[in-house]
Length: 181
Image (cartoon, rainbow, N blue to C red; front, side, top):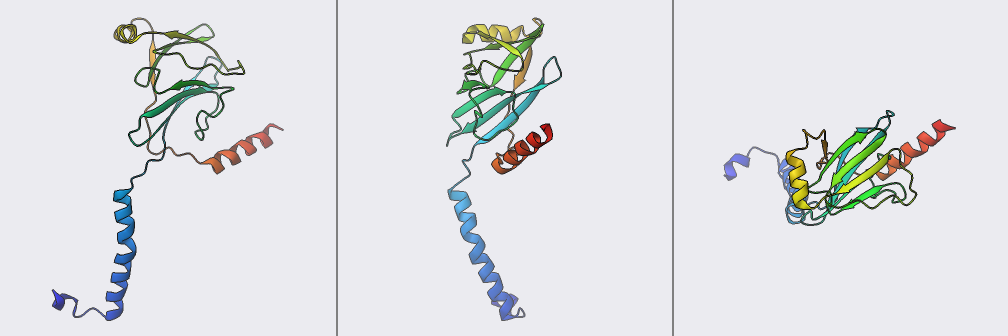
């Protein structure tokens, strides 16, 4: 084995050893301390007047056992729930396995969930929302007949590509305010 490296100059051997010594700790730390940062999901829904509302999800914790789904007029992911004044907040997947069944009745968005979300404190939202709270058996029965009853489902899966970029969201918000003047 020593003969293989016989023709390689000493400088390159030293360089290889230094690179190996620099990379190895990062590989070991990455294996020992995996990334437990929050993971996000985002799905938009067009409401009747053409505007969008956003179903956002954040999952965190060592086992991913902390789970929040938010219905918001705002697309921002950072610091979910972004604004309890304007957001409907489902804590710990109270919506029933991350699924929310819905339908539009006139100008109202009707939701079918396991546990109701906390209401926005301001009472303002781009669309009127009515929540029908169902126990798990009722939810299961409703799922079987969802299509026949004209219901659609929103699932908010975690998307590993979504990240919270606070600075980018702050700049975007400032830019939109300048454009509104």
